[in-house]
Image (cartoon, rainbow, N blue to C red; front, side):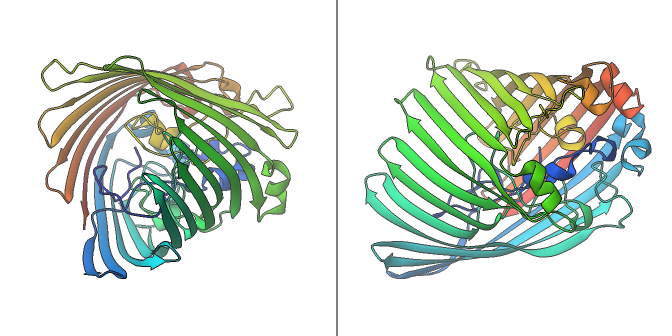
Length: 464
């Protein structure tokens, strides 16, 4: 899971905001990726701001400040299945990351019948040692400070839970489970902090949102924050969500890649279209069924698709109230023998729960982006106390198109992850993670290694 500096239990705030991720692709897997990298790094995460501190509040004006900080320390054995230098150009066994984001928020009340909200923040990140992603190979202890959020929005109450909202600038936004749109400014490389993913703001973006009864309608224009050497791009689209009943909801999204600064990339990636539908149903009080299907085409070139079907069963009558989850997910790969590109372009996916959508703590963070995979996931979670929870998962990975990465065997491997989370205080969140990835024949062909990759991570964040 790529983390943000905001705890998963953070408090919400008026007006949307935005967050980033980068595909964790090794150097040898960057096959014809130049045309897609701008799309893949468009950042769209709707993690709410953390618990701010109010400095001033009156009938007309409110001023709040916030500070999010996080650190993670990693230790790995046999990274890249024993062949890290052959795959990412450096040896990697242990490293640490740090991130901090100070924030300032201003709210002007009673403006044109609504409320104006504005925010500004900056992010500083640092990595000590060689990270397993390999994007900072050759850079000693990379780190950088950059402007992050800078947005203004207006929101008016339409009665009940209904509202109308407009936001412009650099802000956070997500759709559904984050399968397509959630995470977006670029971390890693010379900026450091690849895993923490502290940069979240989409650049030069806009959002219009209307909530009316059970229907939510949104229109968006989202730009990326690609970092040094990256290509600036924009996508536009619309999103609709409808609560059919207390037990069922549906959604639909259309996204089109609208603009690339690079003319060569523009010829191949502009006009890529994504059509997405999703639904969730509480079949019983304990059993929830959900799924999503996304079809991609356009530019007379793309023919990809991605989908998943998931069931969650809550054993509420047992001690610790465990929940069991099974999910099967398919994100297509490219068949190199055809003129079309059948690879599913993962756009700006992000973290909303363990395994969504960094599939596997090792595989999802360090090896693959959310593409060219068929995965089975079985996950169990339990609440040990009011502040401590544990999650364990098993994932089986099969390559959809082995030829895309130059291998002949589709069996990539099996991963086991265990997460222990502790919300120590309202502001302090701690986590420990252990994971192992056992390579299949496809992984051995791909990396040249055959050893079991093991991983331990300790994480801490504070939010003010």
